[in-house]
Image (tube, rainbow, N blue to C red; front, side, top):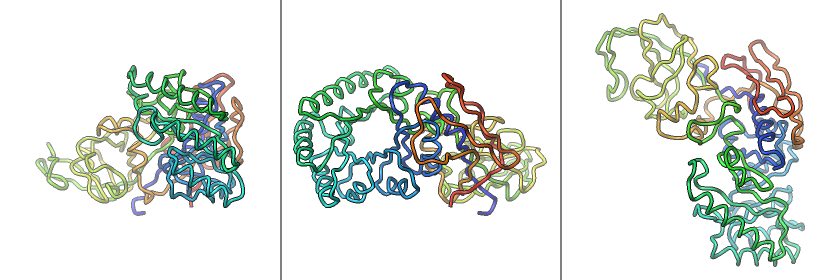
Length: 424
């Protein structure tokens, strides 16, 4: 693309994050949730790096993503978390992908697919413990459990998991957490009384995994934290490192007099004579339109607020008296190493969460990678993250593996690091 926009992904940060999360939860297994192209970072590279860092499972929401992991040679356990009755269950069963079922209809569709595939489906029963999203309610749960027990007895499914999801784990002290935890324990107990013996019970998302050890059970499901983000107040703890840096180059610089209106609606007016820089990214590339006059970027050693309305493919920054020129780098957000804003700061400025900021970065912006994605599709061993690979070009700095018992990842690739490969 013109202006050389890039989303640079630090895979050593992903490895270090996975290793730190693995150490944080001790005996619980870690499922790295890589849904939505690993929160916009790249499904396959992030999955491999997370496994190399010690994750035992991978989680997605679409069967197509689970199949893509298998096609890439990744043999680790994969759970498709979203229970869609019309999904490609037969393909998933044949490829040894675990499937979620939160209703009798979905369970029956999975069982029928397993019969066609000639092997039992691995199923995680989803309980709605109070979020009122996916899963069976307390009223429907007994019937779902009975149906699952019958299908298991018939050899069409194997109940390998029971799970649920927390609504307010990222709101410290929220009373719903204890209520959902109690409901989940009862759901598990009812399943066990029916003769089901799931391999894994899992409830905790990133926020719960970071702050609520009573929710960990057999496995935790970090998603955003694998790429260094969290929805907790203030964002992720400092021992997790954001993995994405979004940057581009100025394509035009011009001087305008004081009192000049800028962009649609003239919502920004220069208070003095100033240089304006044009950045070739807009809401079509995932920059929120309402980031105008709110979010900051980093250019020529300083933060600059986006001046005026973000357009479809461009936005303007006010450079003041800075002697800028076409080709100067602009960092929208990154890990914050050189003073650039972070995705969390963008989220705070725009009244949203960091997950929305990174996932809306369009695939029109090429992804480039620094660091070692991991060379195996097998899960890593808890506490043994392995040795990160060395970056192969100047400016790419590889992170060291965390020492035993250490949870603070070492700094990895700086925002200015050279990109060493691109996702096809």
